Image 1: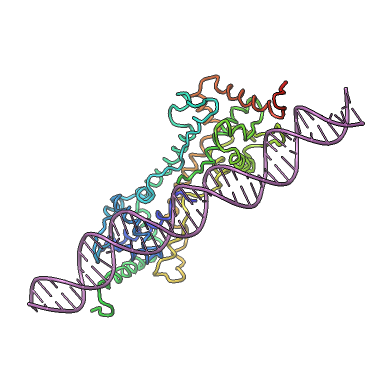
Image 2: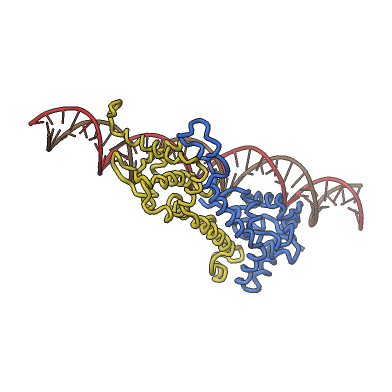
Length: 177
Length: 177
DNA sequence: GGAAATCTACTCGGATACCGCGTGTCCGAGTTATGGTGG
DNA sequence: CCACCATAACTCGGACACGCGGTATCCGAGTAGATTTCC
């Protein structure tokens, strides 16, 4: 399958909405963000705890709690989010086949295991270039590219949609004042 | 787990031995290559059929058959092998979450799905840089780096080991002339 | 001694079993603002 | 009118079920060289 999990995609899309939401200062709950994008709410909640541990978002508990960005959107790279959600897993897991050569017997000679495996080195280089590309774009970069495609009122529509759901919380059924 | 399968590692290590073997011109059987590196023989055989379909190696059938490189080692990149074994799978599988926005209802507007998803675009760029790195090193590059670490007689020892196993094929037990 | 049959080991391809991990769900615990209630 | 309590909805964390794909194994079919057998 793909190297990056579905959780990375979920998290990134949510964070893009949080970037827009930064202007108003209001927090957004995981349930509302999940309903907004039709993704499983409990699964999303689990992802957000990882984002919080990584210092990308801050969570407010209680009935009017929710998530907001922990630092400026220019200070959060795509790589940060990937690492927070998926951990720092590597593209290639070297099994040190070089030490299994039948000519060596039980104990491979020192020269054969000195330094990194040459195949592994190529893969590590490829991974480093990939991560450099992910570290080069920030949340704000992507959010602006999305915002440039949407019509002007779309962003405020989303803000209204989230605010509407947030303000009718805790109210008794049908007794909104 | 890791993005590149274990098959990629098996195949690359085998191909490195085939590079050394190119000088003598003799083919190497998958069974011998598997025993040389302690990897499962049947699994390796399956990998080699994929490498053959990709035009990386040629196979000779029959009792004294085996594998050899289909073209020069300078003409086979690491990316070629990865694609032959794992197929062209992508780092990131976009699920088009952008079209699931609750504000859209059943049919998302045209502007929301125009062009590639912005998150997907970042991932595609990262993947392109990774693949460029893998396409930059050839089998010969890696083989030379391995050969530089090994003592001089090691390469000939491997050739002798493989030749020894190849020549005692088809002979009746204990009746080698 | 030479031709035919047999045997061995190889490549090739499909079917299948196993198992770990990603994905998703469920549940309980602790927390905070709101609405209702009693003094 | 004010203090207090119950409720709703939130975050947090662990446990668990499900399904897919990577890994590995097995088996049968076809092929080519070495050996044996037979004329």
